[in-house]
Image (cartoon, rainbow, N blue to C red; front, side, top):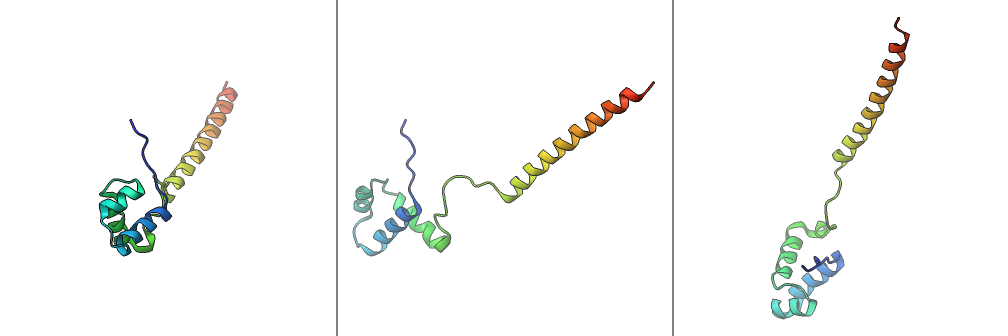
Length: 95
């Protein structure tokens, strides 16, 4: 199985620029760049739709909310440990 190809934002922007300004056929551009024939179309559509926000990065980015929830989980775990230790201490004090 082939490893998935990853392309930088600069590469994608340059490919879209070639598509718009070169006048060459998309198949020719794709072959020169070493990408599937439909990929420049997708990149051009993304650039058209999102403008300067297109190609911000690859993969999944952690949400602020997700990071916040993870911090809260860690805090609650610490509080739970403190309560367990307190309960054990007071259990020893009972006659």
